[in-house]
Image (cartoon, rainbow, N blue to C red; front, top):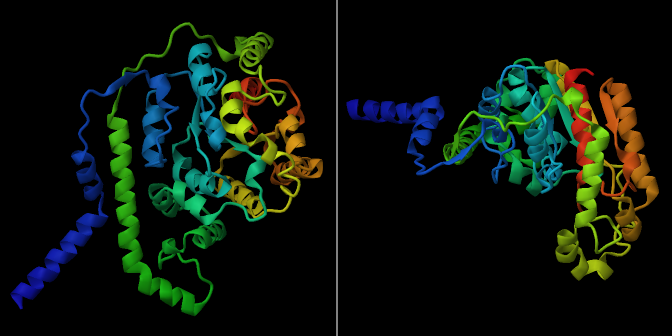
Length: 399
């Protein structure tokens, strides 16, 4: 009997340690990195690891290095955040601004639903209670985000932090869990029930031990990946000198620089794309791509419900939101046959959503044909990013 009790006690202790913060500490202790790269804290805000691990920890570490008197805005988006141009805020702000920073969070397939979870995870860490969401029309395909795409960017640590957030209303929390469960049913447990039927809830209870174990393994993997990335960089604490206050920025002069930069990199095509991107990603398939978006629709999508869920999370948590409605590349969309009714319809729906939700909207959709506004077929380019940065500054500063 003693042996049985000892065995049971040992198993219970092991499970308790596995589920406790001690397991995270042990995983972090396993990470060893030699000769870490040295960078300024100003660069810290713009790291984009292959996966978005440990959302809360990464953000806390980022803003910890922000000097006093600097306004920091949490900016959520998707793949446009990785555009390799000097007007991308990750490059432009360190070289130009002394009193403003943007924590850019997002990569491809991180859309409204993921960012709703993320917002619930980090809201209590956001000093100015403001967030901007860059909304791309390409998100709003009829089926919305696909399960495989969502799972590829999902953060278990953010999910657990969301579940711990007691400020979410019961209704919003239930909708957020149910919607996520549609894409990742393995997350549905007794603690995070996705079912509305007794049989479904019974199954969740039965599945809870396995789901808890599986999800915990994934969370610890994120802890390891995130720790290895953070330990690979040694931050010096110094900002790049020579910058100026945002209120003194000459935006016309900056726009002129953006035009010059864009003109130097758009010389081989009439679609306003970067030459390198165009020659590698477009030229080999140019004929096949003509007219291929003729049946694309952006006006009927479950993504609109996900966007509303994001706004409901923000409302529950007292976070002010600015939506940034991004345009399509007009010249390219005409070539691919995207109906104007769809791009215009997307813009109109975003306007209605912002008005009904009483949130600020920066509508950039009228810039579809502005030269050097895009880097490629859909991502913001030289002039486009300047407009976003200026809008973010004005929103964050209240100017």
